[in-house]
Length: 110
Length: 114
Image (cartoon, rainbow over all chains, first blue to last red; front, side):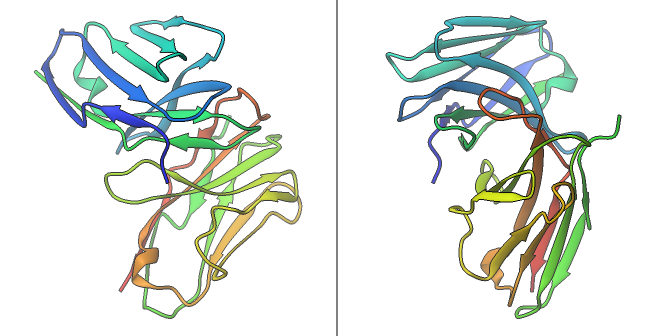
């Protein structure tokens, strides 16, 4: 069973535009992580935000976390063709187990 | 350094056959995870090792699934008497710890049961 639910399921934007995807989850968490998956590089960790943090930045990525609403968002600014991939949120509630959503499929059009 | 590797990358098995999937984690990583990923879905947790100890196998779908990591490094996921519903990508991940550590994933093994 999957805890996270990403929204939208699919997103298609022009290169250079910003992409925003959301994740909602059901139970309390210690941290939330975002991963990217494409056929070339498999699953790659992007960013981790802890439950006591509200916002985090890494390069062109910005993640927010609202624990009261049990939701997170991932913003990718100035998108590039190489950002085409599926993006997953994964929540860590216990000591080690990550619970994953079904992902958002992002397509960047040239 | 080298990342997580998995072999074989692709495996086709006839229904009823046994298969063994191998994972070589990043050297020194104490934590090792196996996930199953169906097409269009996120990974689903199968089992977790801390060194050679299997601390959680709650995600294994049935007693046909068995995992081991006898020396705390390489791990093998074995599926006995494969069924069509076992067709999926099996992902291995390792990390240097738990509780807020990122997981490093291998490329996966795509298992197709015919």
